[in-house]
Length: 175
Length: 251
Image (cartoon, rainbow over all chains, first blue to last red; front, side, top):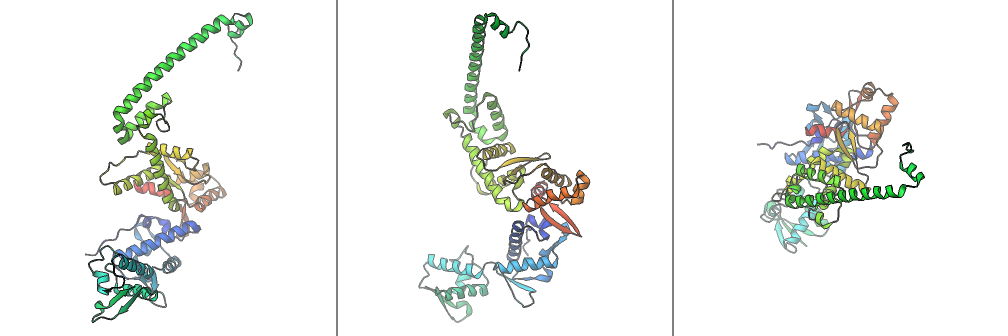
């Protein structure tokens, strides 16, 4: 049963669909759009935003919708914030990064440190579905996103990856 | 201010040199009545203190009771909010309103970017109630009335914090920014409240009767302060006020 999404109050506010001319107000508005896009896709577990038919761009109940210029502004701002990345050159599909890879990377390392995994090994599987990770930001995380985070840690010299028999058994050693 | 009492007044007596007898008596009467007045007040104060001691729990919990109590104190010149006298401090009302003042300020700052620094007292109250029930599971939830919040804002005002109350029609709004809101601004916000949604320049000039320039001046200030947001729809420009919109939404 798909989870119902609870739209924030601002979604019923007509001016939300007009890009605000006053800078301070526009910044507030952009923040609210970023939050809306992120929470909508995260709670419904939708990985990709398709620009041409995203249901967030219009609210029939109040008879307002974003024009294409406004949609572009909002999407550019969203990608700029690091929570989204274009999957294609023509910018029609945007991958939603519910948690930025850099944030995940530091969350993972902190967890490893706190739980005594430094200089020891754990598998990729354990990282997203293991017993010790309840409530962690990377619990149930998309494997691809996880690997990107681990790559960042590798670059920082904080871990090293090695292959296991299956991809789930791929291991990580933390330093 | 000249008094024209003719020849029987003090002035006349002074002239006649017979003032001493009369003034002494007048002083005596003044003194006696003053003394008795002071005695009465003292009696009332004692009664009030006893009352406060007996009912301090109710005063803390029930807004209506609290306000009845405060209204009894006022004519006696007793101010439990600011008084440092020990027999009032047990009530901790100063602390109560101090704490509330901090909470009100927090709410106003948190919502400032959304509404430009103006919001209805009712909305502040709703937010405090929501926050109260969210975090206090076992403790007694304090019910803040609108009057409580008004008193807390008075406290904030006294601290010179820029907080003040502005009346828009029948609604009391708390303004937490130094922006000067003149009568034109208030009238425009009130129109938005009456209309119950966005307003255009034409609507304002039709309904209030100002020239376009005057309307635009007022709306532009409110827009630039973040108190109004703009909505472009079918070639028209509507001005919406989050502070007013939220209020109607809350209904």
